[in-house]
Image 1 (cartoon, rainbow, N blue to C red):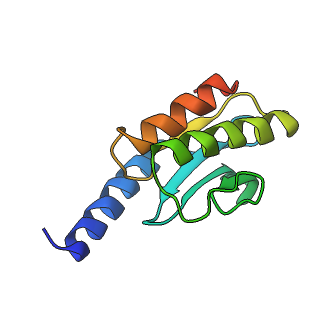
Image 2 (image 1 turned 180 degrees about the horizontal axis):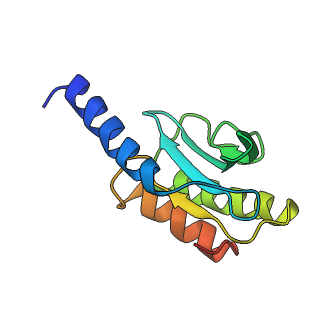
Length: 119
């Protein structure tokens, strides 16, 4: 399977997921994305189209630039949970972004749950 088919497949799965879930100001969407080098997570209010909180391996506080592995995903999950607490957000809707709920996605979700987010 070549790269174009994989990318198109993930995009198709992501569209299917997004049909069913949407974030609000009370319960934003926790969207995750994994590039080859970094891990990104955002809390998004889809009603107003705004990103409320974001965390990634590019953040200086996390200090894991260029690492997209299970450990860095867990650190990003902890960071997004801490920032959500600061923004008084406790409940979210999880959007795995078309990625399989395994490995990095699971590590980020578990770390966010341990940090206090409910989903």
